[in-house]
Image 1 (tube, one colour):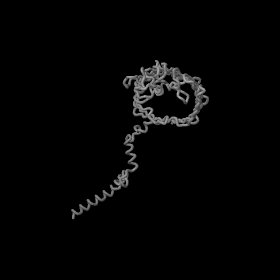
Image 2 (cartoon, rainbow, N blue to C red):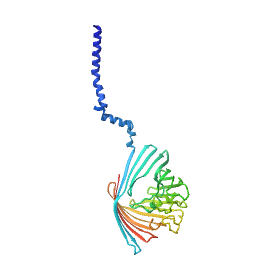
Image 3 (cartoon, rainbow, N blue to C red):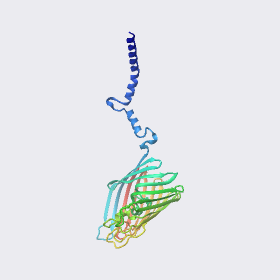
Image 4 (spheres, rainbow, N blue to C red):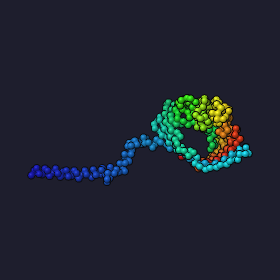
Length: 376
């Protein structure tokens, strides 16, 4: 009888313990799973936080990425006048999506950054930039940028919709390693890099053997100036298209140099001047025209004066030109005017007129362009 009573007491104790604990167990189970074994929303959030940094606010990947972009819509009308009366003049016009850019910048750590720029232009979608930058910040102000990038040759500042002639001759986008530093309170910056240009010397191996170097300085708050050098001018994005040799090479590699100054004065005026040129002659028939009998040493310049008429309205005039620019590659003289009107926040409407006159080929062009652009 005593044995049965002990068993009964033990059984009652187990039943009471189960009754008290079961609701807590059921509540805990319900917090992690629902019918059919599907995880609850709370559990999914907890798992996501663990995946992106265990809920650490300072380590979430989406907090380290900045996205920006640009959309440009352009309408243009161009008249082409030939001095030869036997050749009929031409007119053309168009409305199209000119440019779309989407940039992503990632701050990986205090000394490591990543950058990718996707671009749509002329019906092509491509990666325009993609590089990694290592920097020492304030303690060690040296940076290294490796990847596809715009090389530090030229400045190419402009008020106009149309690219300045200096950009057509000198802008180079290529895979490269660039090292630089800023000092004197960030008023002086020097940089140098190595790249494998799009054009090589005839008979030479395809090697990383081209160099670029630049120095810019800001002696006053309103003045910025600089000079730059490249050992491979013909490899610029625009100028490389002028190579007409069957192999796409040149006999001797020709370097180039550039100088610029940008200054603001009287609180509303901005003056821009830039010059870029080859440092030696290209052999006859290597660029522009295979039948050309002259050696060519191209040089270009661009000057602009802008004035802020209102807070959101800027007017500018520009004059540029070239020597040895070819029959139809670079105009001997180019001048015009542009109005930039910020109609809304980060929204600009530009109206531009440009006249171009070519030397070797008796042709003149008048181009009117209207551009609507937004930044985000």
